[in-house]
Image 1 (cartoon, rainbow, N blue to C red):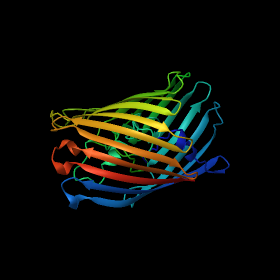
Image 2: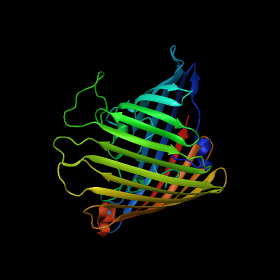
Image 3: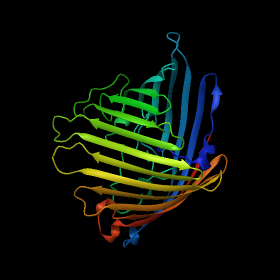
Image 4: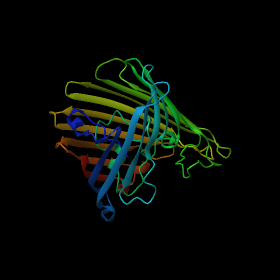
Length: 341
């Protein structure tokens, strides 16, 4: 599920679940309208309504040995009419030593990681890649979490570092593995991967920084290994938030051909009051071999309606997929309603 990044105005959307002993159930429903008008090719203009449902089930308690805290859970997620499994979202078993601030996690799509939508240049709502939906060309903006290490099943450790933040390390025996059998399955063509990361405020109120690096070991047939770096910084003072993110991705490849992609995200947000937030955003992406930089400029508004959050925006997408033709430009409007329970 794409994570909703919230400012003060939308923070009230977080709603707890129904407690049954140490087990909680919560969920989210999203309904979205997206309309895209391609420049120079009116037949490619598109309008559609999308939906996403997610149910989260989790439990927690203490082990009867060592005094360790225990937590486990999973989510059932349906993106539209999903034909693949609904059970591989946020699956985890965590074991935490509260005194040392150390957590061991056997999981998928769970611990802090360089997710597609992790960007300190985007504070809430739609990420840059979302704005290009319905265009005539495929966006060169990241459509996967770099080398997808965080989306694979693996084992990780998260360590609190005083008041500065958290560092983490995650190892996936097979990068991209979605565990299609109950006892694991041997993969012969995909290598292992790892990701290291940091998130925190470095002890400075209003500051939010992160840095992630993941890598997939080069397979025997590959000339290049997959690598992904994602760094971001954001600062909030009063009602104003400003942020920047840089992403750099080199895909695993059987050739030595240039395939490095670099993104830059810039954002400025203003919380008008406790309910209303306005943001302006800019993203550029360059890919080796592309004729031009892809550019996205957009504005969006978030309004907290209590049990429902409303997001709306307008985007100008230019040179989609690094192409300079008129048909590679598109303007989009988007509206999203999010209800939590």
